[in-house]
Image (cartoon, rainbow, N blue to C red; front, side, top):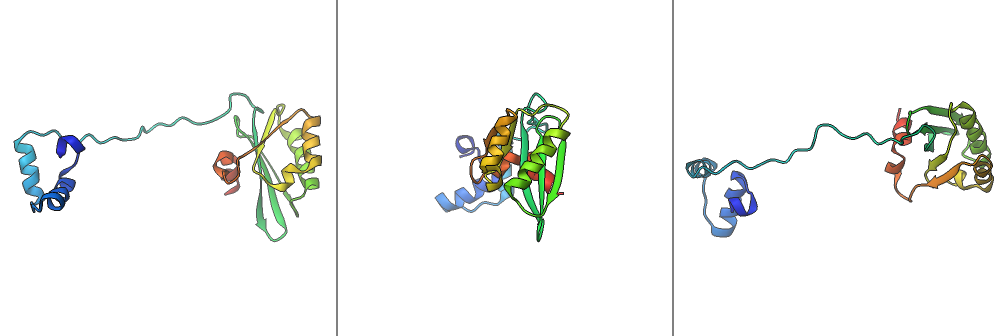
Amino acid sequence: MRSARNLGARRLQTELMRLHGVTLSLATIHKVLSTHQVKPIKKFRRKADFIRYERPLPGDRIQMDTCKLGPGLYQYTSIDDCTRYRVLRIYKRRTAANTLDFLDCVIEEMPFPIQRIQTDRGREFFAEKVQKKLMQHGIKFRPNKPGSPHLNGKVERSQMY
Protein backbone atom coordinates (compact mmCIF):
# COMPACT_ATOMS: atom_id res chain seq x y z
CA MET A 1 0.00 0.00 0.00
CA ARG A 2 2.88 2.36 0.75
CA SER A 3 4.48 2.17 -2.70
CA ALA A 4 1.28 1.77 -4.75
CA ARG A 5 -0.78 4.54 -3.12
CA ASN A 6 1.94 6.68 -1.47
CA LEU A 7 0.31 6.49 1.97
CA GLY A 8 1.85 7.78 5.19
CA ALA A 9 1.87 5.98 8.53
CA ARG A 10 -1.46 7.39 9.73
CA ARG A 11 -3.23 6.47 6.48
CA LEU A 12 -1.60 3.02 6.50
CA GLN A 13 -2.99 2.51 10.01
CA THR A 14 -6.56 3.37 8.97
CA GLU A 15 -6.36 1.35 5.73
CA LEU A 16 -5.04 -1.75 7.57
CA MET A 17 -7.92 -1.42 10.04
CA ARG A 18 -10.53 -0.84 7.34
CA LEU A 19 -9.44 -3.47 4.81
CA HIS A 20 -7.87 -6.21 6.93
CA GLY A 21 -9.14 -5.60 10.45
CA VAL A 22 -5.55 -5.32 11.74
CA THR A 23 -4.95 -2.80 14.55
CA LEU A 24 -1.39 -1.50 14.80
CA SER A 25 -0.01 1.51 16.62
CA LEU A 26 1.73 4.32 14.72
CA ALA A 27 4.98 3.48 16.49
CA THR A 28 4.83 -0.09 15.19
CA ILE A 29 4.15 1.08 11.64
CA HIS A 30 7.07 3.55 11.84
CA LYS A 31 9.32 0.81 13.20
CA VAL A 32 8.41 -1.57 10.34
CA LEU A 33 8.91 1.15 7.70
CA SER A 34 12.32 2.15 9.09
CA THR A 35 13.44 -1.51 9.44
CA HIS A 36 12.71 -2.06 5.74
CA GLN A 37 14.36 1.28 4.87
CA VAL A 38 11.29 2.72 3.16
CA LYS A 39 11.92 6.27 2.01
CA PRO A 40 9.67 9.02 3.37
CA ILE A 41 6.81 10.33 1.29
CA LYS A 42 7.67 13.20 -1.02
CA LYS A 43 5.56 16.21 -0.19
CA PHE A 44 4.64 18.43 -3.08
CA ARG A 45 4.86 22.09 -2.19
CA ARG A 46 3.84 25.12 -4.13
CA LYS A 47 6.49 27.47 -5.38
CA ALA A 48 6.97 30.45 -3.10
CA ASP A 49 7.28 32.96 -5.91
CA PHE A 50 4.33 33.77 -8.14
CA ILE A 51 3.91 35.46 -11.47
CA ARG A 52 2.14 38.79 -11.25
CA TYR A 53 -0.45 39.22 -13.96
CA GLU A 54 -0.27 42.52 -15.77
CA ARG A 55 -0.68 43.86 -19.28
CA PRO A 56 2.52 44.83 -21.11
CA LEU A 57 1.58 48.42 -22.04
CA PRO A 58 0.02 51.23 -20.01
CA GLY A 59 -3.55 51.85 -21.16
CA ASP A 60 -3.79 48.44 -22.80
CA ARG A 61 -6.59 47.47 -20.40
CA ILE A 62 -8.41 49.60 -17.84
CA GLN A 63 -10.58 47.78 -15.30
CA MET A 64 -13.65 49.74 -14.26
CA ASP A 65 -16.36 49.08 -11.66
CA THR A 66 -18.86 50.69 -9.31
CA CYS A 67 -19.32 50.04 -5.61
CA LYS A 68 -22.05 51.12 -3.21
CA LEU A 69 -20.58 52.96 -0.22
CA GLY A 70 -23.79 53.80 1.57
CA PRO A 71 -27.31 55.05 0.95
CA GLY A 72 -27.12 57.29 -2.10
CA LEU A 73 -23.32 57.03 -2.49
CA TYR A 74 -21.61 55.10 -5.27
CA GLN A 75 -17.89 54.95 -5.97
CA TYR A 76 -16.75 54.66 -9.56
CA THR A 77 -13.25 53.19 -9.81
CA SER A 78 -10.92 52.60 -12.74
CA ILE A 79 -7.44 51.12 -12.53
CA ASP A 80 -4.83 50.52 -15.22
CA ASP A 81 -3.78 46.89 -15.52
CA CYS A 82 -0.11 47.68 -16.16
CA THR A 83 0.78 50.69 -13.99
CA ARG A 84 -1.99 50.41 -11.34
CA TYR A 85 -2.82 54.09 -11.98
CA ARG A 86 -6.22 54.66 -10.35
CA VAL A 87 -9.04 57.17 -10.81
CA LEU A 88 -11.89 57.45 -8.29
CA ARG A 89 -15.10 59.49 -8.20
CA ILE A 90 -18.18 59.45 -5.99
CA TYR A 91 -21.69 59.92 -7.39
CA LYS A 92 -25.18 59.81 -5.94
CA ARG A 93 -26.48 57.25 -8.45
CA ARG A 94 -25.26 54.60 -10.89
CA THR A 95 -26.53 56.03 -14.14
CA ALA A 96 -25.36 56.32 -17.73
CA ALA A 97 -24.93 60.09 -17.28
CA ASN A 98 -22.63 59.58 -14.28
CA THR A 99 -20.74 56.88 -16.18
CA LEU A 100 -20.21 59.31 -19.07
CA ASP A 101 -18.92 61.95 -16.66
CA PHE A 102 -16.60 59.40 -15.05
CA LEU A 103 -15.34 58.27 -18.48
CA ASP A 104 -14.45 61.89 -19.28
CA CYS A 105 -12.52 62.12 -16.00
CA VAL A 106 -10.68 58.86 -16.69
CA ILE A 107 -9.74 59.86 -20.25
CA GLU A 108 -8.57 63.26 -19.02
CA GLU A 109 -6.60 62.02 -15.98
CA MET A 110 -4.88 58.94 -17.37
CA PRO A 111 -1.42 60.00 -18.58
CA PHE A 112 -1.58 57.56 -21.52
CA PRO A 113 -4.11 56.68 -24.23
CA ILE A 114 -6.71 54.08 -23.29
CA GLN A 115 -7.12 51.14 -25.67
CA ARG A 116 -9.62 48.90 -23.85
CA ILE A 117 -12.00 49.11 -20.89
CA GLN A 118 -12.98 45.97 -18.98
CA THR A 119 -16.07 46.04 -16.75
CA ASP A 120 -18.57 43.75 -15.12
CA ARG A 121 -22.04 43.52 -16.61
CA GLY A 122 -23.52 46.53 -14.81
CA ARG A 123 -26.32 48.33 -16.67
CA GLU A 124 -24.53 51.64 -16.39
CA PHE A 125 -21.75 50.40 -18.70
CA PHE A 126 -24.06 48.91 -21.34
CA ALA A 127 -26.06 52.09 -21.93
CA GLU A 128 -26.16 53.19 -25.57
CA LYS A 129 -24.68 56.61 -24.79
CA VAL A 130 -21.74 55.05 -22.98
CA GLN A 131 -21.06 52.64 -25.85
CA LYS A 132 -21.17 55.50 -28.38
CA LYS A 133 -18.75 57.52 -26.24
CA LEU A 134 -16.31 54.61 -26.16
CA MET A 135 -16.56 54.23 -29.95
CA GLN A 136 -15.94 57.98 -30.45
CA HIS A 137 -12.68 57.69 -28.53
CA GLY A 138 -11.72 54.40 -30.22
CA ILE A 139 -11.81 52.46 -26.96
CA LYS A 140 -12.74 48.78 -27.09
CA PHE A 141 -15.28 47.52 -24.57
CA ARG A 142 -14.70 44.13 -22.94
CA PRO A 143 -17.35 42.92 -20.47
CA ASN A 144 -16.55 40.05 -18.11
CA LYS A 145 -18.47 36.80 -18.10
CA PRO A 146 -21.46 36.84 -15.73
CA GLY A 147 -20.64 35.84 -12.16
CA SER A 148 -16.88 36.30 -12.58
CA PRO A 149 -15.75 39.18 -10.37
CA HIS A 150 -12.26 37.63 -10.12
CA LEU A 151 -11.64 38.60 -13.76
CA ASN A 152 -11.83 42.24 -12.66
CA GLY A 153 -9.66 41.51 -9.63
CA LYS A 154 -7.51 44.63 -9.50
CA VAL A 155 -10.43 47.03 -9.36
CA GLU A 156 -12.40 44.74 -7.00
CA ARG A 157 -9.47 44.60 -4.58
CA SER A 158 -8.94 48.34 -4.93
CA GLN A 159 -12.53 48.99 -3.82
CA MET A 160 -12.13 47.04 -0.60
CA TYR A 161 -10.12 49.83 1.02
